[in-house]
Image 1 (cartoon, rainbow, N blue to C red):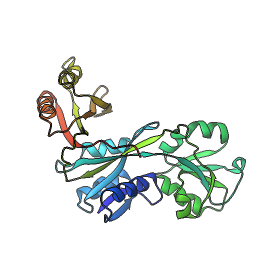
Image 2 (cartoon, helix red, strand yellow):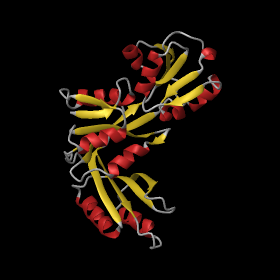
Image 3 (cartoon, rainbow, N blue to C red):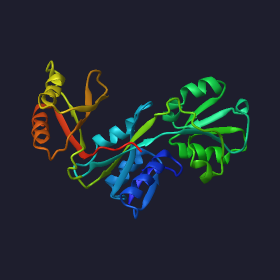
Image 4 (spheres, one colour):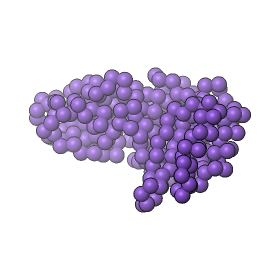
Length: 278
């Protein structure tokens, strides 16, 4: 069973449907109300796999996803990824004029991705953030007022909504990266990525540079680096790294082994095929 960020009608569900049509059409899917609930269910063995958004090309990273990844049991890994185009639509429970809309429900990421449209066309509305765009669609369906939501246009048929405006995202090349987490370590394909997280010794100057140099010295290309606070103390961070290559590559394996012994904290998150843009 694959758990995903629900309810139905989200971009996560749309991306997951694409993935299972390509990879495992007989999969059983179960929506969860939050990313935290997903990781809890995985830990409790209620589900076998998790499918979550991890970063958007415009809205940035999904913090809850990185928090969950860092707390994963060692028996779980990122085993695949999907890069899915994000086309936002404005929907309402009934046809209405944009000037009559008082409230828009949306996930915070969606409002970031549509900030120019909202500023230009709907500067008067109240933005109400909800856990997912599926929840936003549910709120709009249940209201008799002229309220609207942002989200996946496919939700219109699921919730009997009217599409007021399509493609309201600021960037037509807007994409979200989703990852599948499972107990299966994906074999090497020749076009792979590896993810890991680490923290450096706080009292050792240049420690971050030393770690990154280990990758550079082996010509291992970094595709992403980000940092998250590790505690309430300023200046203490976890660093999340994506790099090209697979843990089964001898060069990558040896490099990560050196990094593991050089860090205050290290966690391998997985090696998996690069997600191709849909």
